[in-house]
Image 1 (cartoon, rainbow, N blue to C red):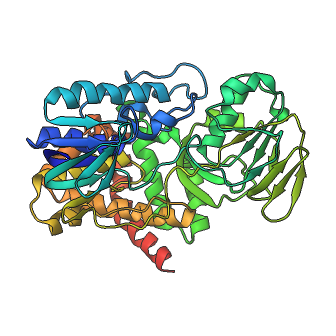
Image 2 (spheres, rainbow, N blue to C red):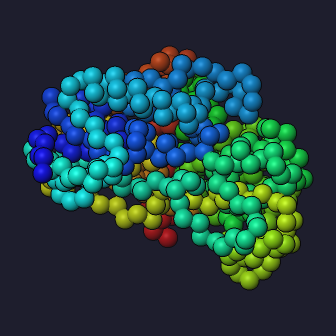
Image 3 (cartoon, one colour):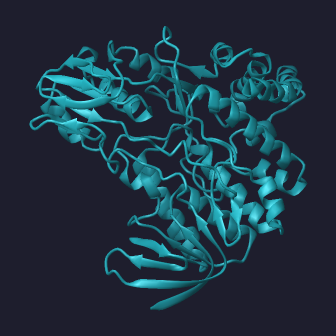
Length: 464
């Protein structure tokens, strides 16, 4: 068996693994072997549906060293007035360019696509079956902790009778013209994307049924814009979040306050959502989704027959046999994944340090790996933060983010590096602002005045 020598064996060439290696190339002289089951870098983006776009602006996604997109402001569509959102094809092309120009061009990265790790220091080609050993001088870096799933790769959890047309969103553009009626199964961002895509392409909203097991709170994209032009929306929005967190008397009251501040949105304002997955959306998309009136809320689907939909709770709903069903039920990440130490002996397990910004989190872990000696110190600066599934878990996530941010502020070099990092959406906004302007100064005062009260109050609510 052939054996390679390297400093780091990196499992996965998705956004997380590549964000880690990118920083390490700048901050160390280490060598890397990257192994991935996909044929191209980019991880789950290789399997994404063709009309997918980033939830967040392209300006703070990807790796630290290379810009994604051109900082263009969209002039039409539901994202009008905001920074561009890269398409899935653009993201895959971006990561392929990072790999080719930045990683392989460095002479310090060897990349093995269509391969899988089969043991400590061993991986196997999925084409030839041959195994290659790796003599690892430092650590194995696992970039697959969240086990990201997309509709085209997940296993369907409901039965579909013969003759019923049921596709993933990947197949929707190819199948859409053969149908006039559609039922979207699932309530997450993928389902929202499918609904908006149909409506943007002139589908009749009355011809769309939407199965929504759980309603979701949604982040307002207006408050995520990484430019000083949006200082009032971005930093002012954060100040509003802190004020809501500092004054809330319950989880329900917290989200009412977050909604009132403009931080949170919901599609149906008459229903209280029970889900929060960080899905980020514009008010333009909300307006499109509200055009759909045929909402089925009987819970999760058990099976689909030609003339009926059977739900797990035993209820049924009538169905048109000519309907095209679109399965959007894949869970993006394992929200319930048990957190573990990021630095543990010979292994680094990349997790969220500032939820939900996973590439930024991986970049921070890389900087800490490069510049700090003891494992205890590294784990003190890199405490995993939960990826929330519910409104209550949002509080845990928010407190975890704030605790990490406070720890980083106490480290001058780390804080200076982070402030300049393009993956930090708010660092560049504050850095470019003239904080002597009265409006901006007042916003910053709101942030400072509410920082500690927000954390303290959330901890009290969590304990209760």
